[in-house]
Length: 420
Image (cartoon, rainbow, N blue to C red; front, top):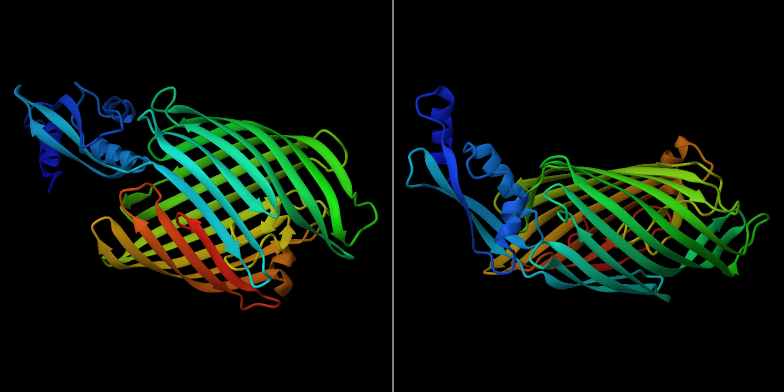
C-alpha cells in the first residue's frame, strides 16, 4: 500500500494526464548514528528529478544491505508546490560495534578459535574497521579497513593486513607431513559499483609464505623449509539481487573470484585460480527460509602438495575437520533449511537442517577425480541460530555435522553469522 501513491503518480506522468511529479525534498528519519548526508549520498533519488517508484525501491534495497540498517522503508507525501512530493527514508538502525567468533572441533580432538572486534559504521558512514586474533595451534592476527563509498556512491577502498600462522597438513604420496605455515600479507583493493546489482573489486596483495617441516612423511624434491615472497593480482565480480527482511533473505547472488599468483622464486610455481559462489535464497511460508550455495573452482593443475583448495570446517564442509585434504579443483554444495522457532521483540531462535557435500580434483589429476569416492564428502547435520534483530550480524550459530562417506569424522562448528 505504501507504494500505491507513487505508482499512481508515475502512471499519470507516463500517459500525460498530469505533469511530471518531481522530488521536492529528501528526508531521512530514524537514524541516530548513521549520517543522513551519507544516506542521501548513496541514494539515486535526487531533488528536482522525476519521482520514480522503481528508483525508490532500489534505494531501499540498497539501504537495507548496509551494516548499520536493520530495516528500512520509504514514504511519499505531497509538498506545497503542485506536482512536487517529499520523500522520506525511514530507517531502523543496527548496533554495529560487535565481536566476531568462530570455534570448531572434531572427534579427533582438534580445537581452534578466532575472535575479532569490528565497527561496521565508523563515522556514521558504514566504514568497516576491525581486527581478529586466531589460535589454531599457533597465534595469528589481522586488521581490515573497508569503505565502499569513500569516494562517492560508486567508488571505494579496502585495506587488509594479516599475519596467519597454522599447522598445515601436506599430502604426499608417502603419507602426510605437517608443516608450520606462516602467511604475512598486505592487500589494497579498489571497489566500484556499476549499479545497484553489480560491483567489482580489483587490487593487489603482496605476501610472504614460510613453510617449516614439523613431522611426518617426506618426499624427494619436496623442500622441508622454504620462504618465498609472492604477488597476487585479484579480481572479484559480484551480482547481488538479494532482499532482506530481518533474518529472512530471498533472491540470487553470484560472486566470482579470480587470482593470479606470481612467485619471486622457483620453489613454488606461478598459478591461476578462480572460483564462483552461486547463492540462492527462498522464503518458505512465514517462518521458513531455504538457502543454498554452490561453489565451482579450478586452479592451475600442478602436481604439488601445496594445492590451493582445502577441505575445511570453516570453509565448506561442517564437521569434516581442519584442512584434511587439498586439491586443484572443487565442487561443493551447501544447502539448508532455516526455520524460526521463536521470535519476540529483538530475539530470534532459528533451527537449521543442512547437507554439505563436495568433491575435489587431486593435484595433477583430471576431471574424473570429482567422481572418485575417495574425494567425495557428504555431511548432513543440524544446528541452531540465536539472533539479535537490531545488532548487525549478531547471529550465534552452532552446527553439528556427521559424515556418512568413507573415513568420515563428525564435529561441532561454532561461529558468528550465518555459514553462508
